[in-house]
Image (cartoon, rainbow, N blue to C red; front, top):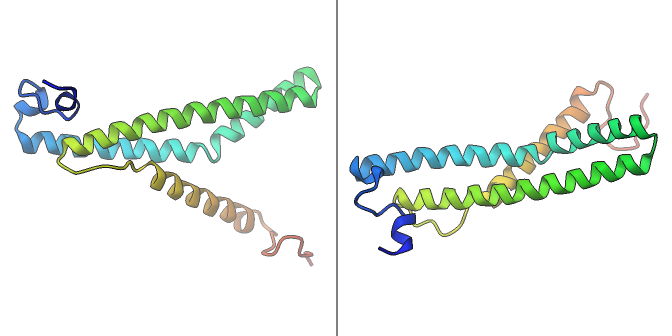
Length: 148
């Protein structure tokens, strides 16, 4: 038995295959939807919670040391390593999603991560504009426009 048959779930003694093809395909579809949700939440976290968390940590470093350099160094390095780890994890989740899609009978050659990141960036920008221009009270539409 070759490796691709194991990855694609074609083994006859597999627990998924014992329930029948439609049950295995349905299970793979549901698991794939769950992984897409994980990708969406993970990529949304890259736009606000992770940077804000590292700014908070940097602020605590400044409170302790009084050094802006230490504050910025910790915040930037922490942000960089957190984002790098998150991107690697999201890539692995995307590869798992492609495997599940193939198990469900789809001819999946590309992952969904690119589309998920674009969608999450769009939602992140819309959320920022909503917060900045609508929820902030007296915000203006054109930057540097005087408020009367």
